[in-house]
Amino acid sequence: MNARERLTDALYGAGWSTVKKLPEPVAVRLGRTIADLAWKQRGKGVERLERNYARVVPDASPARLAELSRAGMRSYLRYWMESFRLPAWSAERIKGGFVPEDLHHLTDGLAAGKGVVLALPHLANWDLAGAWATTELGIPFTTVAERLKPETLYDRFVAYREGLGMEVLPHSGGSAFGTLARRLRDGGLVCLVADRDLSASGVEVDFFGETARMPAGPALLAQHTGALLLPATLWYHDSSTMRGRVHPPVEVPRSGTRAEKTSVMTQALADAFATGIADHPEDWHMLQRLWVKDLDPARDPEKDQKGTP
Image (tube, rainbow, N blue to C red; front, side, top):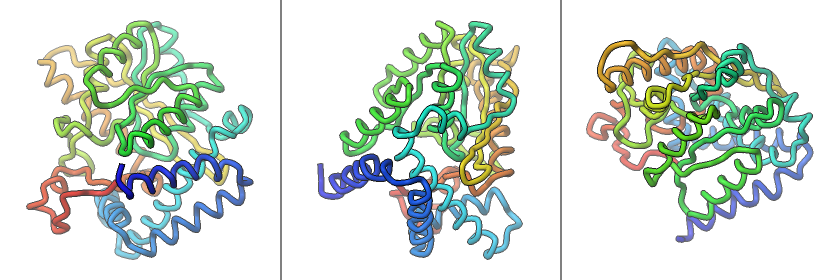
């Protein structure tokens, strides 16, 4: 572990050990202060966020994009402040912190016993939605986490999410798909953040008028197991509440090859994600490259192959 990795691990550790002890109004103010400082520094993450918002709101003026990126950073830091504090939230606070719409798509799907794949973009706080599901509905579920460096930081995230009632599998290693498929065949719930491909072999979709890649996993799991595939979107409603919507099921096409079916289904997910992101762009925490054009350094004026963390 190098010095930067040790510092990163220490900062996240301090967040979970210290921020969760703060009164909620103090944590809110702290998050907003950090967000505004980061926004004023105009680092690569802020610049990338603004470029991504330019795709979502193509007619936005520079002033509007700046306003959006500032709101986006505040939303992003709200996510972190909430995440650091979630382990200390009471069951009542978790239950009152999230109000979903059209939840029947999820509950009916689980009642049918076929299993459900719930796919979400990086909107608002997906960890809070997961904690609400395990607390309010009593529904355990399985998810996948990206391998982080250092390994101790990855272990912190796994422990944090397992403490909220989730089963967490590593994204790398090749065994996650089989475990997810078994959970679904047993009638379980699998939740996947699915608007950014981490494998470099994702499915190309049209996303806000340009080509992006999204993971094939949700569509493949639905085909492989017969589980219901449901998109979901989230947004912050006010200072204490997050809202969400479970979208209608994405059907498996009746004809076509597996690749063709996967393409159609992943495009349907992208379309559902786009509706939620367009309605609440400031709550989309995409500080990384997403569109194919940006993933090719030769076609990107930033000339930055490292991207953002």
